[in-house]
View 1 (cartoon, rainbow, N blue to C red):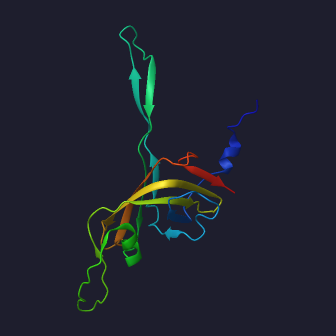
View 2 (cartoon, helix red, strand yellow):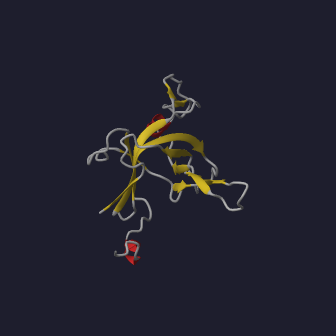
View 3 (cartoon, rainbow, N blue to C red):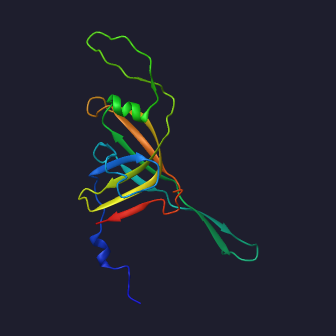
Length: 179
């Protein structure tokens, strides 16, 4: 039997992000992301990580070593920051209030945001910087918050946390694509 884990795997390295696209949850098709929403993130703000699995050992009184072990998947999150508080971003990620607010001196437009959490379910596609690879999460739950930690050097941002969920189609929860 020929080896499958070889140096050739190093030709397929996913580095950087050229695009993050969001589409409504549904059946994944070849054209799902063709006209989808695209978000732009602060450089190096996106993290895609899964914690190590937790382990529970099963032991008996007669032996010092375990007789079995149970594993549970670690928490999986995607986080990032969008450097914009444009009306479209606010309406997508937050519950907005339809109230009409009066203009204030020098400003004529307003968007009223309620601080109640809004959970967004979406399909996510992240494309590598060189465009040769992509990862798709068919069902992901997003929640956002405001982040403006350094007012003199950082843009007022909409930070998001996304949690990948089980794919109801049963065809993989995280899908990796390559050209």
